[in-house]
Length: 164
Image 1 (cartoon, one colour):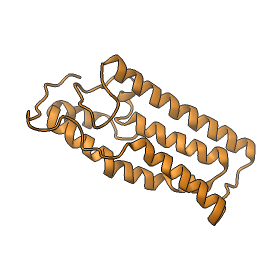
Image 2: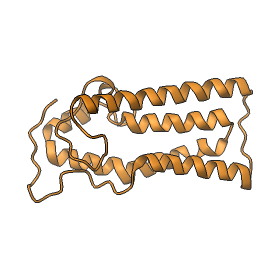
Image 3: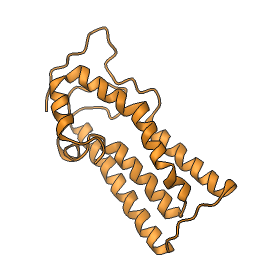
Image 4: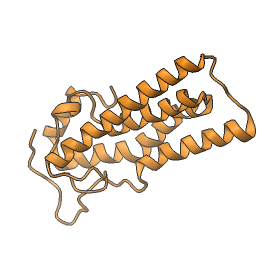
C-alpha cells in the first residue's frame, strides 16, 4: 500500500513516541522478577515441563513476529524506530495479520519469560504493559500515520486489527 505523504513541511515527520517501547516490556520483566524474589512469590500452578513448553513456544513465536516485521521494514528501506519517518505503509507479510507485530512479539516474549520462569507477576503485568504501549506509542503512531497517509492508512486500519 503506497500513500502520498500529506505531512506539513514544518511538522516533524515521525510519531511522537518519547520512550523506546522495548524498554516498557523489559521494565515489566525486571519488576516482575523483583516482586517474585522480594515481595511475594506468585507461582504458576503448572508442571515445570508445561511451563517450559509454553515459555519456549511463546518466546519463539514472539521473536519470529519481531523478526518478520523488522525484515519487512529493512526490505522496504524503513527504520523500525516508531519516532522515525515512515515513507510508506507496509501491509504485506505479518502486517496483514496485525498492525503491530513488533509489540505483539514483545508481549509474547514477555509472556514466554513469565511462563518459563513460572513467574505470575510477569504475566500479571502484561495487561498493564499493553495499556502503557497503547498510550505511549500506538496512539501516537496511529495519529501520525492518519495525518501522513489519510485514507490509505484508514483503509488499512479498517482491514487489519491493532493486535491480532
